[in-house]
Image 1 (tube, helix red, strand yellow):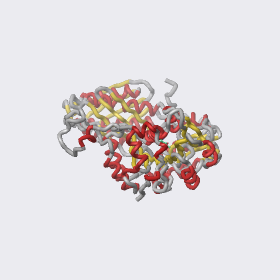
Image 2 (cartoon, helix red, strand yellow):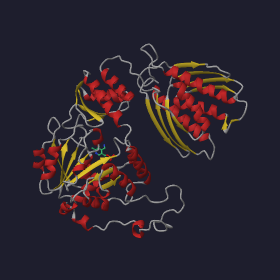
Image 3 (cartoon, protein in one colour):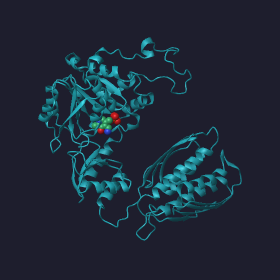
Image 4 (cartoon, helix red, strand yellow):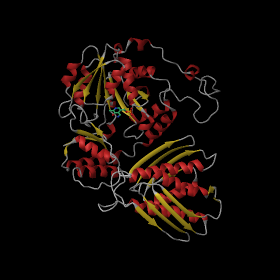
Length: 546
Ligand code: PMP
């Protein structure tokens, strides 16, 4: 257990106004009543899931994290991402227009931006060419008004761990606060600086749930330090800086741990060694993070080639110290394969790039909110949540027989009827299909299918970039279970028009359920055929043609 020695904390470096500050006290803090009828916070009394304010002190979250990290709860500040802690550290310690902070270069851009927003001078000591710390340069830059030194280890975008002895040398010498940002620490295998907090009252460690823990959207980050520093950060934060959903999910994730860390680390090694073999690659820097800094012969053209083929990396080639470099985050194995394939074919024209198989579409209207993720390599599992069981079952046919992994989440106005949900899923799925077949590359374009069991369905597809729809399917009843049969034609016509392709559907059979299923199955098979990757003789992508 690490306990920090607060008594040696240099209180004098706190800004005077912050020392004097009477922080906002929430309604619940004032009564300190554990349970009762809450008429104190002007909340809505009706429990619709989120009517009460979240815990401003994040007690359960801190309890869980304290156990995990072996620290006292009072050594933890929980913020809306570690970006919040970066900003608050500046606000607690630095007097605008008088004080300065010192950092390294290149490093994470938010230190400079937060300093600038707070009107605090920002000084940067360049790393040496091998990205190691230039301790002397840092010391030379600091003066009596330097209140905070920001270090990042593993550093972004260089990916390397800073030398611990060198960092601790700075912590010992420097009169102000030294922040070590360990956003990427979990990828390094190093135990980091938290165990050292007990020895150094002027040390703050930042960590985040956005990287190894996979929770970037929920915005949860932490600062660890001695209890005095943490008290001040808590006093200046917004009272309810972390919403309840984020707190709850963070607790759950901390208990579970990261299930993806090992896979990302082995992919990092695989990608690094594959890239080292390629002629366009000048250097792959050793990485202790979940990204690689890679120097290319021609970084700008490589960046554009990747972007034009749907692979987005970070261009760091204009950043001082990273000239000619792109920063590449480690993705899933199939994504990394595509990256390597594209880089290895740089300059080899004419080369047919397979279509980009990963498509994500979100759409929010008054009636529905839909997120769709499609993986056209079909490598993953599907998860279909439209709220309509039968419709999920039909979409599953597209996934299984079309070789497309589909994650579809819908919250729709099912209390009205199924119409908007079915229609909007067709729009989003059509849009995803269109994005896929108009991405760079070639595909067969035409597809047909007539699978037959007791029902018979014929589907013809032309992915030519123009919408068309022909439907010859009669259902015996009006509904299958709760699902109105008229919605099938509506689904497919909307799909064809959103996807800008031509679709001909015919079906016959005794049983409506089987007939519908045969149509979805035949559609999926025909689609798979039309999307099959082409060769130089086959029809080129319609991108830029139609
Ligand atoms: N520190 C570093 C070094 C980072 O790279 C990032 C995000 N890219 C952050 C902090 C911010 O993380 P968070 O999502 O917790 O705000």
